[in-house]
Image (cartoon, rainbow, N blue to C red; front, side, top):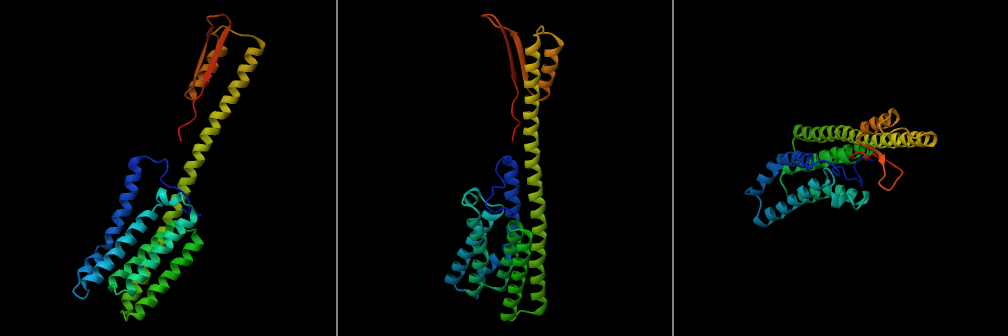
Amino acid sequence: MGWLGEEPLAGRPTLEKVRIRAGVALGVLFLAGPISDLGNDSLTTTRAVALGIGMALFIAVYMSLLPPARWLSRRGAPAVLGALALLPAIAVVLLVAGALDSFTALFVYVAAATGMLLPPRLAAVVIALAGVGVGVLGAARGDDDAAIAATVLTVVSIGALMGAFGRVTRVNAELRQTREELATLGVADERLRMARDLHDLLGHSLPDPGGSGLDGLRERAQRVRGTLEAGARPDGGFRLRVTVPLPES
């Protein structure tokens, strides 16, 4: 189900989180064209300020979605879907409010977020609809056919590319989780085997602490970064302690 209701950056090193967020921020730099057009003489000061606020809101929502921020993920899939639906809504409102043609580039970011967040089939449908919508909007505005075709192709291509990247990212996350689960199961299995061997060892005879039986168990404990302590108790008797840590997540 993509990244809906998940926290993709949870548990990752801080440097990796910064790198991912920085990569998304670099992608936003391509909106420099529409932002610079806010200073166009054809726009009144009031309209330019309103469009600038709308652009800032679009960027803030986009940055919160790729990947979903913790505050958004904790509210579940409906919150992520709502934020995703807000992107095309903002883009349409800005264009209807008189934004210049360069603001059509916002739909490229809509397609990118859709490809990353939604399941493949649903993402393909939404991206196709976004491409059709951009084409219809361009025709209604009287844009050149070549410009319309280029914009539609860009929207669909970026959406498909980000969809493929999203699938790879999710597969890697699943593999990482599976590896951690296997490591945990491996340690648990080794602990069970050691407990069974200790039971057999103590149930029949108790060798000298330096004997080969305890040496073998000590080596097995060390293989899973554990320790084995054996020796006489101060108050009499014999003490045997095995400590095996859980793997780091």
